[in-house]
Image (tube, rainbow, N blue to C red; front, side, top):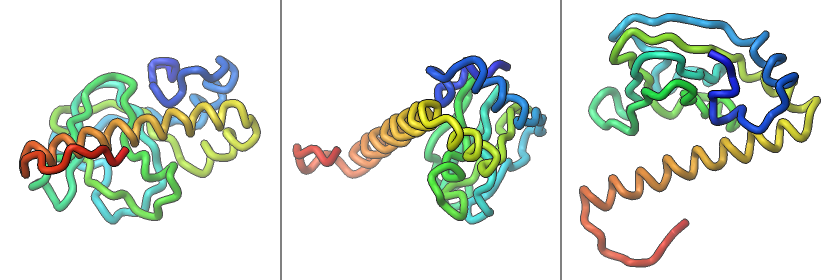
Length: 151
C-alpha cells in the first residue's frame, strides 16, 4: 500500500512519503493477536493495509473503535508524545499493516517542517474526530443532559 492512501500522509510530497515508506515495515498478524495492549510502550504508528482491528480500553470490554479501512492509522499515541498506548489493538481478522517507528518518523518530519505541520494537523483532526465520536457514544449511553458544546 502506498502511503498516499493514508490520511496522515496526504498532502505531503511524493519524495517525503517515499522516505517514510523506506522506514516502514510491512507486517502480518493473525486473527486474535494484539498489535499492542494498553500500557505497552508507545513506539510505533501502524497504517492498516488489510483486515480489521478493534481498539478498546480496559481489556476487551469497552470498545473505542473498529478500524477497517485501508490507510487508517492505529497507535497515534506514539506520535503524541505518550509514553504508553492508551488502548489495546486486537486483530479481529488477519491483518496486514505498515509499522513505522515513531522516532524515525519524527526525524523525517523535523527535517521538513511543511510535512511535519501537515502530519500533525491531520493527527489533530483524527484525534478530534475520535473525541467527537466518543462524546456521541457517551451521550447515547447516558442521555443528553446539556446542550452546550465542549469542542
